[in-house]
Image 1 (cartoon, protein in one colour):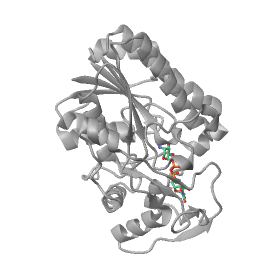
Image 2 (tube, rainbow, N blue to C red):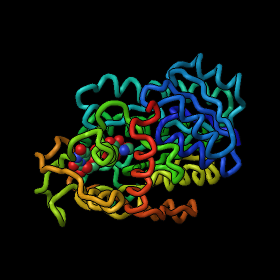
Image 3 (cartoon, protein in one colour):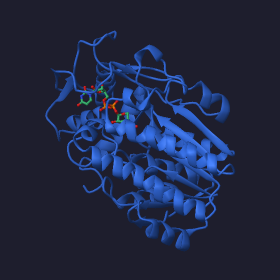
Amino acid sequence: MRVLLAGGAGYVGTHTAIALLEAGHEPVMLDDLSNTSRVVTERVAEITGTSVPLVVGDAADDEIIESVFDEHGPFEAIIHFAALKAVGESVERPLDYYANNLDTTYALLRVGLAKGIRSFVFSSTGTVYSDPADLPFTEEATRDLVELSNPYSKSKLMNETVLADVQNAHPELNVTLLRYFNPVGAHESGLVGEDPKGVPNNLMPFVARVAVGVLPEVGVFGDDYDTPDGTGQRDYIHVVDLAEGHVKALENAHPGLVAYNLGTGNPVSVLELITSFEKAVGRELPKAMKPRRAGDLAATYCTPIKAERALGWKATRTIDDMTRDVWNWQQKNPGGYEG
Ligand code: WQD
């Protein structure tokens, strides 16, 4: 099927475009390139042998979305990746986060419904869960908006509310909420990977830039959490497993609204991730203990059993696969896509 990927030239979108092509689908990317590079389309073509159309524009602009439908449609489905997504940054820029992360959804729904799409897949997040007493998080563990610690997570939960009400008014629409845990890793070719602009907020790309010599040392944000080694635990999922989950979700979509946790269910600590990365690199990496980061939970990880049963999908790649693939990408692209 032909699928519009809003924010599709980003980290998860690019890997999903590859997985869609490999499954025989026809993705088209709409992206404002605010956190990626148009080089990704060349890399996708090198990997798959297929050129994916990329329209550069704002996914919150109805006229731009309509022009994509007119030029590259019709589309059976929209996958909505386009969002600002740094937890810490969202606390400093709430208006940008609420405006961007909601206006894109409004515009994509307005145009998508008018053009008769059947499915809407939404890039949501495991940070919509907040109560450690609910670990490992199932899809029923969402709590009230006010329980969430940051505008990013709140914007995602607000999106889920909007989508539920829109689906209620359009019973024929398939809405799938994919709650990602921590996407990391890179395609095995090393041709595409995570390339955040500026100094990375997230651990894995930060460690990768220390390993390749671009940054001096890794700061470990807190070693006094109530976890086995005192450092924060997360449910890291290989981005290719995540991409394959999107294809399964699309192919199993049906009228109604459904949410799936896309994670491994295996909590990995900061020190365990760094140790795995050092194994991939073959040497120790410079690191230093730092104070906790505001807004961080000690641990967050899911039970992915619902997606496994309903979609026939399961994350299979280990943390060592993730760090090996990230190191391969970073070595081949020490300066990212722009070199
Ligand atoms: C992971 C762990 C930090 C940086 C991310 C995305 C968010 C969402 C979930 C999709 C924590 C520690 C970090 C560093 C460190 N993804 N850390 N030193 O905060 O879980 O959120 O995944 O929806 O959008 O931002 O990921 O990689 O920032 O932190 O010690 O330099 O690493 O304290 O324990 P996080 P992260």
